[in-house]
Length: 167
Image (cartoon, rainbow, N blue to C red):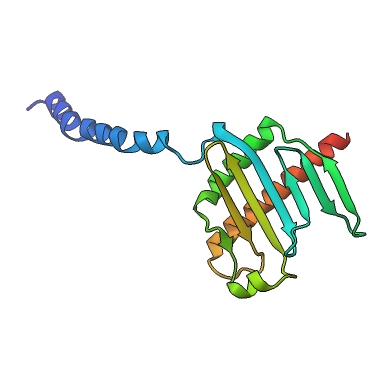
């Protein structure tokens, strides 16, 4: 068998079946991805004690928070499409979709009305994903890092948008 014949044989017995398999196996997964960026509708972000008095809703642009003097500040801040895309991509990178609905140490955290907590909810046309995160969580380090970074990215993006609207 010639060198060229060996290459053709290798391609027809290994590479071509692998490509066919990959296409057949992964095409439905990609097509039916649960959280598609183009279907992104809004983000809800809340933080505080059990009342979650600080809130942001990207659908309405309503941003309410208590300042350092315990005065309620109400603003209207809209995320741009680029901001929304950035947050959706970051959620993808952090594995937000794979996190449990509650990231806490257990019932003690949930029952503690004074414990700081963050509520993050991504809304899409067909479904949504929400996670309640307690920063005091001391379980899986990778899980805590993922949700902690997601929370910081959202907070930073809202702060950046707020700063842009002031100027």
